View 1 (cartoon, rainbow, N blue to C red):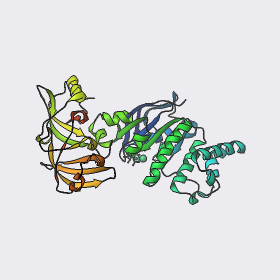
View 2: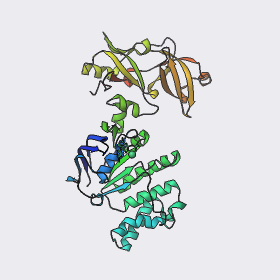
View 3: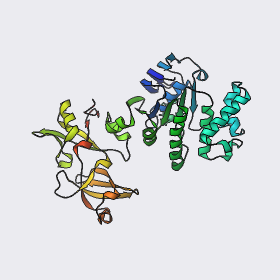
View 4: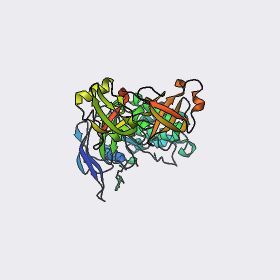
Length: 375
Ligand SMILES: Nc1ncnc2c1ncn2[C@@H]1O[C@H](COP(=O)(O)OP(=O)(O)OP(=O)(O)O)[C@@H](O)[C@H]1O
Ligand SMILES: [Mg+2]
């Protein structure tokens, strides 16, 4: 069992920087929670307060119901893996992993059992007698994780453990962390600024900005129903298009009028706006690039645009287009959806039409930037 509960946790540094404001979060036993947000938003500070490496200015941190504010890091039952996984260069991989156990005077046969078991899980058995300098970045990363694993920790804290690795290795290690999590079956709190990492690893994501929590939810919840504009633009790549426009209402229900083209808000989104009694007027309309389609002149809801850049991504194209009033919009089109001969035409200056449906729209208050459907 290892639940972690933060109640009104606050961090004020000596220079009066408030790095974390009234942070409330209940992490369940065996949950994988990811803190994500831009640089400086307070992710590491929060993690370090849980670990006991940073004093808590106000509020409480509980592990398994026990307040740990005044406990030493070693007494909190946590293990931490850092971004710069500092291994001892003069020690072998085996000795690096065994180090903390030797400090605790654990018998050598027990150490052997634990180190070889961890090495097995991490696939580094053949490197146990090597020094860290003779390992690749990904292998070193695994040693750092191994060091944390042997300590029978109730909670695993990881601060950007993959950020030193190149893109390919990062993808591979990401998959390994998912497997590791299944094997260890313990509580994980993982920090990253990479939304893809957050989406793929997390049971729940905590999205932070300037020391405040912007949303806590499953990856699906954060993606499908972002509570505010910040989350909407942070989750998803390329990021959501935001269009300042009018939300109107007539006899047949709500509509929006992006770039002067009237598009009805039909289906569930229209129903939801009605149920909320959403006020008409200026809004920020969000539409993800993958939810925009190409259209033909004369189609209802067709918005005329001009192509500026066509990025070929392999199985899809990222089209950067601009509308008649000069607004830039990004459109993701699966190459398989293109009509024969169409692909060759998609060069800068090409005049085309785009459209989208009511069900993919997100609506934000133009002043508060909050989602009209969740506020
Ligand atoms: N020791 C310190 N003294 C004063 N201010 C600090 C200290 N450590 C961090 N800060 C400030 O606190 C805020 C949060 O920092 P933190 O390291 O938690 O951010 P982060 O979200 O982990 O960012 P990154 O993604 O860059 O690692 C920042 O404004 C930072 O400048
Ligand atoms: Mg950090």
